[in-house]
Image 1 (cartoon, rainbow, N blue to C red):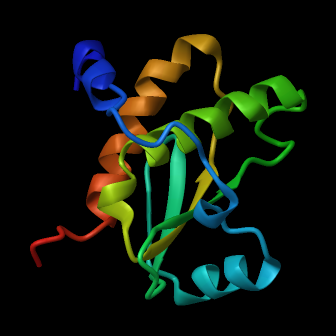
Image 2 (image 1 turned 180 degrees about the vertical axis):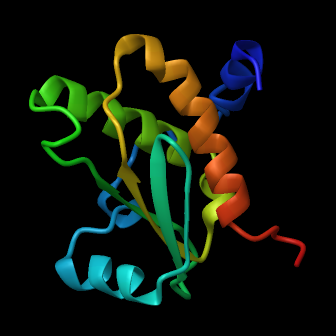
Length: 131
């Protein structure tokens, strides 16, 4: 995937410009239930877990530890990247709880390859809506 394709993947649709609480995993029990199911995929940048939730929307949880980046600026950069991808493609994740964990530090230069890696990882993780 090239940088142009990564920019097309992250192009904003005309709807939903917010990321409300109903789209996030907030409670420890919600995180635990997804971790316990053990349906996971990973790549060099991220590891992701998925579980059907039976809701008319998808929800996401993001884990970025201080091992990844000691500074909050770096951790927040990773979280923004994941949230933005999820927000723009929320229709693909309807009915699933997803947890994404960062596996390595993101420098500014790694943001574009990180976006591409995230897109590929979630394409492999989420089943096709037609199936």
